[in-house]
Length: 182
Image: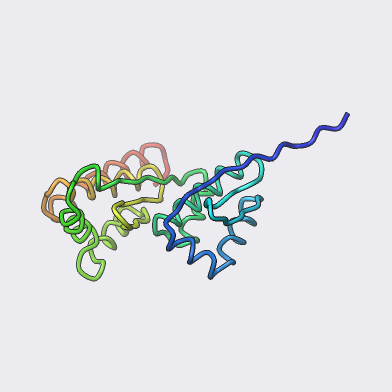
């Protein structure tokens, strides 16, 4: 008796403006389908992903990361087993839209300078989109970037936030040296 491999389905909801970007650039979905070996359809209910469960899960994470403001190439980094996705919802910290806007401005900095500095030191990718700050990177790089961002959220100075991040970076580098990775 032949058994048929079961197809599953996942749904992922992303902001409407990101769905519009996907509809204008079908190569985005093609890239995800080819990378994850699954089928993706966009409907009024959202984005439906069909394939085996692991491939669906991978595609869902990639599309979700794209929906949080990462480029599709940055989101595809999640296919690497050593890369993770993390998100901070600023609405959990602040009730006012004005305060959220101020904190986002502190995280981004003038001409993106703060965000670039955090990315350069930590090696994590950062997206500030909507009311969230999201990260893609290794567990250690995300930890370093989150250390800095959380300090900024807590109202610490940029200098203090950078020091905390750099201390976490030195600690990670030392740990890597001890196991022969540096």
